[in-house]
Image (cartoon, rainbow, N blue to C red; front, side, top):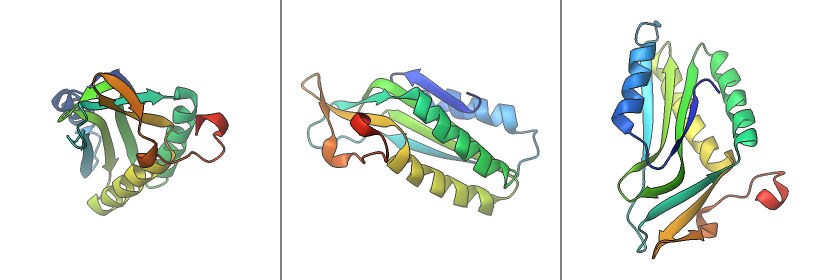
Length: 147
């Protein structure tokens, strides 16, 4: 899906954000705002691991594209599938918008909604095993057994 990329393992932040800049710098947007999520070393984890249900993710992302389009903006997203070690990126969000205020507001709403509603499941990596991070997860409305 245009604007949404899933990568195996950790994200190449410089490559992804540079490609967004190169692609959109002449599109007459006044702002390109990025949010980069980095895996923190905490509670003895070696990193995080992610599962993604792409059909629901595509629908969720398409709704965000439509919301952004109403404000003459676009939304971009890259996320990891599988294992991501500590101090590496698993999530990058971007907004291209005509004015900075629109972009700043959209990036805040997008990242918060992502944390609550994107169908991505997180696991802690401890002793090379994936352990579901239930206490840091949010159940998805209407997801049934996927929640």
